[in-house]
Length: 333
Image (cartoon, rainbow, N blue to C red; front, side, top):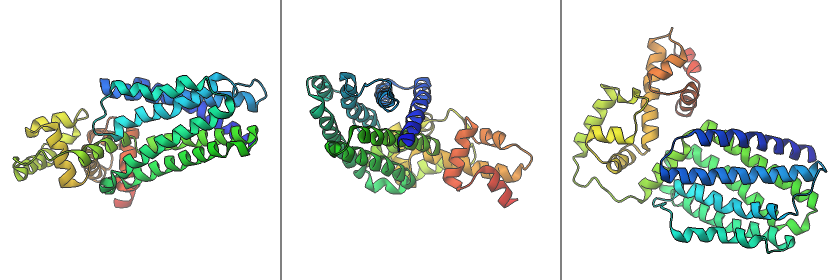
């Protein structure tokens, strides 16, 4: 178990660097930047905890009994909340009352270690209940992202295991607690990395599902048949999806709709969000090109279909077609 914990700590520290770099390089709007900042804080907190665990397990230093350790424990839950709220809440604007989420962090330094550790996990259980309720509210949208929900279920399982660990902490030796907690944090990093590789647009897909679940209809006075016919023309004849820069705002402008209207139209008519709708259009084009242009490289076909990188193309193709582009070409030629 000790060796396993050390391996997971090393994996966590290495992965955290990659996640921080990738997150920092992303260009986002102001509201999303605040959410990304919370995500960065979460990654830093978890990696710092792993570093302090490493010191104990390697018999180098004892950082677990420090104020820094308890402060990090209390910062994890609210930072995760602020990161995920941008994705899971329809109206996610920040308010002054949000500063109250940081109050436990300030008081954590005044608590003795024997109370501070279980207290952090107790507070975390409240945030987990909020997360469960938020995801459950999307049950009507589950057909749109069933595989993504399995990924979220993995995080739930890990989070529940972490909370159970916190509640049985008095029954464990300190070494058993540190080893177990290190492994669970490592599993969380592994699950996050695997999810992002498998579903690179999971955040956008879930956000669209949230908006669809809570939005009031904005299409009451819209000729949906005419709009759908024009949308079909833009996709099938103009192949607008091949534009790498295509987004919700651009397509809405072409259809003379608001972004909210277009999002609702795609959600109600196709039972999926804008991002997946466009990915499916691109994959259909890629399938056609794979068979009609057998000498073209897979990368060239992905770029022609509108994907910006080969990794995005492969991830989307596997998600929608259930196989790689190369396998599809081999099976159908």
